[in-house]
Image 1 (cartoon, rainbow, N blue to C red):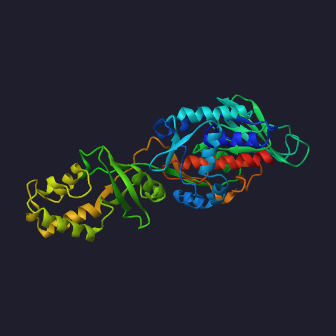
Image 2 (spheres, one colour):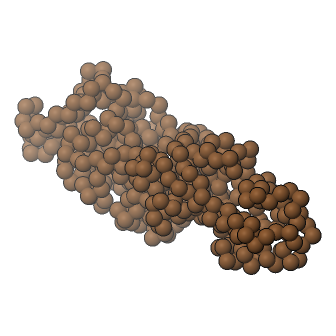
Image 3 (cartoon, rainbow, N blue to C red):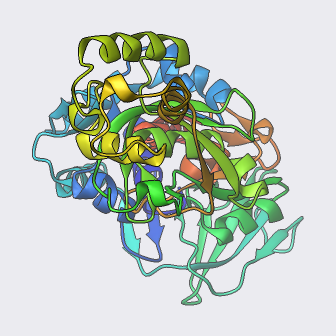
Length: 431
């Protein structure tokens, strides 16, 4: 269990629970549960209220197919029940996100720390791993495989054991302090740490190059200037990346461009193609997702007939924030005093185009500070998802973001961490 994050802690607790006689040590170079502390704006979005594994996997741009089996064994309902059994009740918000009823990530942090202590997990901080040697047999110098990663901040959680005189492999883990820890199995749960990838790669694994996922869009467009804070449901499509990259949901205009759930989800599904295009793309926005061009035309013609004497900019007859409506109206050249009866058909067509198929140039990405998610990591074909054990290196297990698995925003990434950590811990404890 390498790393003191959500997956590492859950794996350590699951191992110690499955095998109370196991000596489980969690080593962390930095701060324990760092992402848990800051997720959800400090409230910790523990999971999502989607309790059907077949539906749950649809929220993972990468890794959903591989997670289908694991999520059947430990899914969001199991997560809710686990935390309830450990004294933490979760609540569901209208969008399905689940948080502790305290609205504080400290509740989850304390729960995991207490559960680890209660099951006998030894927690060590400031313990950076500099080298791992995989060996076979009881004596040093027999069939060894050494991985040197310098003196960085990789951390490890291990099951220390006395080596036995047989052919079973075991590991020698050297810490930055010079201490050596022996283990017959290791769980790598180092998140998107470059050193974690290096360790796995040196043990024979392929790494899908990590690139950012869950980010905001930099859109320097005059139509958006002065509208920061305006929020509305939209339909988005990356016009240069194919029809499949589409999302419908809330959008928030920011000082630098666009954010909100619809943007974040689109960034996750388009993480690779956007990276490859250097975050230069054309974004098409339908500001009225309940309409297409033809249905909106019929509605506006009816409005033109019924409200002929009203000023177009002042009436806002569609479900849009008034400031946004006024900006889009003036964008197509409609003057503030122009009445509906005075609207030429050509300008009406331009307004319909702007409302349902507005085109905006994406000029870069921002950072979604509540989540630090990447796509990429361990090639999933090299992992046994029954146990989360490596197919390349017996005794090595994986959990969490080090795998090429990532979900959209809403608690899905934590659910992957709980699920893979639990499966790995069960397997490590029972074998």
